[in-house]
Amino acid sequence: MKAKERQHRILALARQRGGVEVAAAAADFRVAPETIRRDLSELERRGLVRRTHGGAYPVESAGFETNLAQREANHVESKRRIAAVTTGLLGEAETVFIDEGYTQQLIAAELPTGRPLTVVTASLPTAAAIAESSQATVLLLGGRVRGRTLATVGSWATQMLSSFVIDLAILGANGISRDFGLTTPDPVVADVKAQALRSSRRRILVGIHTKFGAKSFCRFGEIGDFDTIVTDTGLSAAEAGRYSLLGPDVIRT
Image 1 (cartoon, helix red, strand yellow):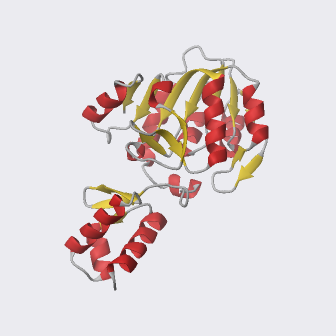
Image 2 (image 1 turned 135 degrees about the vertical axis):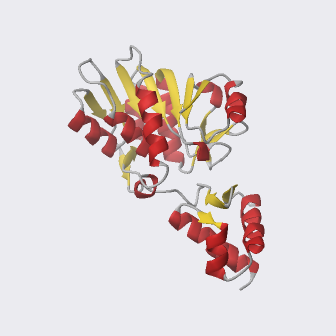
Image 3 (image 1 turned 90 degrees about the vertical axis):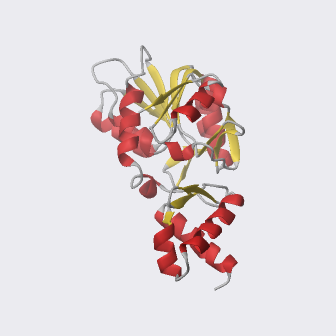
């Protein structure tokens, strides 16, 4: 098998499984581990994967984005810790925007009860989680529903958001980069996120460590747009410090 074909298959496996390990791939393709490492280095050079100790995971792009089922299977405990810390940062907020994504669904399930709270979201699963487990009022943005994430997008969603002044926005990103800011694969998703930033008075960015240093297709904001970033300890203290120099407090949990 030629190197390019093997790299194509390795990338397909990484996207299907959420990652690939050197030892397993070497056994699958019947080549030496050093060959797989070279393949992964080439894929990383092309911006398609990011290397980890012993393997790599795929980078989301205009041509590839994980779905909710994949997000619900990866780094779940880290996402639960992020959700618990984030809900502790609500402060006196009475109106909250909660973004699409699995971590945001976990945040929605952790919202406090017994206090006035209005939640605005584009995510159908998040709206359902709040309606079932909380006394909060839920406002679901209108628009076209994306099958991959079950979130609404388009002009109806952004126009509705533009009419609000929201106390706190809790957003995620597919890529979090000091050089390229906050990115996501789909332009219409970027539009909703950008409008949520414009409509909010305080902003929290949530994301597991694998999002950091990655970049996707559409930029919707900058690191300095956020007051706080909540992530897991997979992001090193040194790297967290570099992000904090751009403005936000960085909390590792």
